[in-house]
Amino acid sequence: MSPLFRIPLGLLVMVAGFYMVQKTEVLMSWFGEVPFAEAKFGPGGSRFFYKLLGVLVSFLGIFIATNVISNILESLAAVLTRT
Image (cartoon, rainbow, N blue to C red; front, side, top):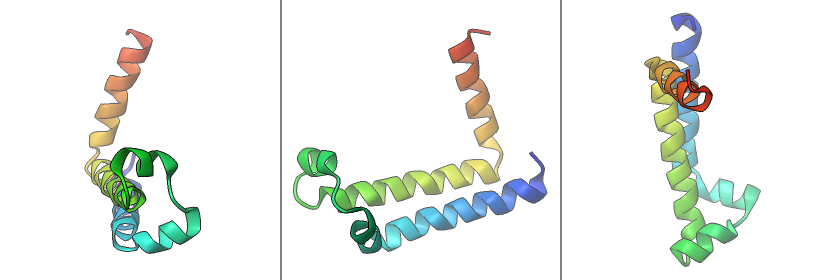
């Protein structure tokens, strides 16, 4: 992937992850509580889940911007296809 496309895309994904962490209440109003998170993490588990998801999205954006994601996906494809 071209750096002219990869770097802005990675930055956009990082910003989306940051806003997921920053604006958890907005996500709660849009999507509601997550029953799995409430059962496993206790009261307030959905907020923690949305924040954790935002951090993971931010890391995904970092991986996209630095082109590490291609190596990760390549390794995953090699494991799944046994090449």
